[in-house]
Amino acid sequence: MDRRLIRTAVFGSPDSDEPALCPETPEELDAFRREHEDVTIWCGTMFEGGCGRQLMTRRCTDKICHFAHYGSGGEGHQCGRKERGKDSADHLFAKAHLASWLRELGIAAEFTYPEPRGSAVVIRLEDGRSLLVHLDRNRPVAWNNEAWETILGPGVRMAPGVLAQRGYVHRIRFDDRPEGGRTMQFGTELPGEGTTWGSLVDAVLTPENLLHTTKPAAIHAPAPAVQQVTAPAGRAIVTVAPSTAHTASVARQADSVRRALLRLDIALRDHPRGVLPAVETIRRLLEADQEPHEAARLRIALGRGERWLEERARRRRAVVERLQERPAPELYRQAAELMKDPDASAEEREIVAAVEARARRVQEQERAAREQERAARREAEDRERAERRATAEREWAERAERRAAEKAEAKERSVLQARVEKAQKLAPAVRGALKKAAREQRTTTWSEIQQKTGLHQLGRLDHEDKVELLSLVESDTAPDTPLWSALLAADGDSAALRLHRDVSHRLSRPLPPNDADLINQLAAERTQLHRPW
Figure 1 (tube, rainbow, N blue to C red):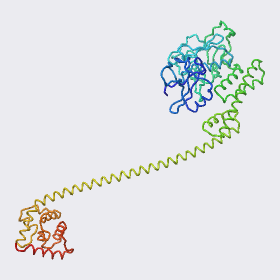
Figure 2: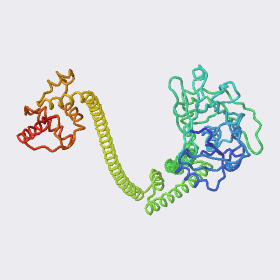
Figure 3: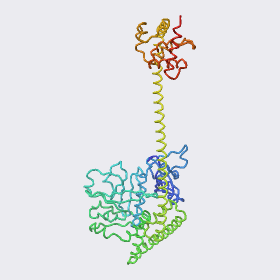
Figure 4: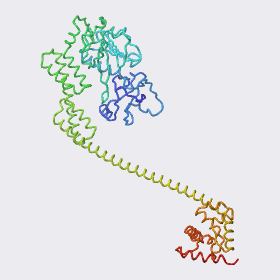
């Protein structure tokens, strides 16, 4: 997460200590905006370095949603806040939850924030006792302070041996709410057992102890409180006398009325599904005998709870109706959350379930369509890859074939060039030997020419070499005169006849198709060559 993004603020004014936490997702931010559309948001002075300027919310899809200063894109004002993450408002959330808890217990208290802001919260009770909530993870806990009880915040560590010496340590921790804000849990850490967590409802403040009802017997009494305190104007300070009763029995005798009121207050603020059970508890208490002032408190709280339930029911009906008209994803999420209410009707649940079933079918159809589209795309990609591969293979084969042809052609040119060069050297001597045989009115052979000319290369000539050689020999022979090479085909053997045919073809001279006629033609041509010189 980008630590420069502002996640926390305060509602109402720059000096307010009512904390605000910006939701992370766009959908949660939309709900947050609707809930607080008439409330201003500020970079409060209760934050270390807070500038006191007004903030706005920014809805983002590429990063988490966050607060931002008005005009933060321009020059000028600089905010000096050192911490901007969600933990930067822990002192304000701790104060809000503890103030609500003490108010439901009927205990007046004064809250202060020591410097640096955010490091701690000090609660001074009306009987002179004080509670210290230590939140600074970078500073050691001063256990010898003036506080009657010390509570450690999230992630705060203790020095070795402190837990064993004290026998217990109280802690608090926070959890984010989807629509913004944070809930607080209270826990007690015991040696060898870890921390048992619960709601503030499970915490009981007695004249001797601040204890967790699930572990009452393990809590030692803190140092005695200061008893002589001057009462503030308009308020009476009740001196609490020490009790000798066992702390476990004290926890069991906790005021049921105050606990019921506290449960309702916490449910209204943090746990909507707990409102109906809390209201039912208050109704049962009103059915029993109560002191007049307690009954009055219960009736006021019952009215608050019933009004909340009625408003919740109206909202639930409105969301379900809108969902039937326009089944949008955001409305479905709201309806699904509202159906968790224990007093949601069966009809409402059926409607939401039917919408959910339709949405699931649509999702399945869309998923099937997407899968079909992906399959078609994969098939097209496979075909394209196969075509590219076939094209590449064909081009490679063509290139290989061209290279082989070029290589063969080059080799053939080389062989032909060597043959021509060889023939050029031998042609004059062979021409001379043939002409001499004609003057002497006889035929000749290759062996005889080799013997008389001394050209031993003639014995190593193949058929093509001889064709090339005789073609050069006859290059200056007139077209209407016989070829001198006719004297080499006198015996009429097939090799000699083939050689004469190939030489004549090279020189574009017509020949009879059968060997018998060719032999007769050769005999006539030799007669012409043997004419008197």
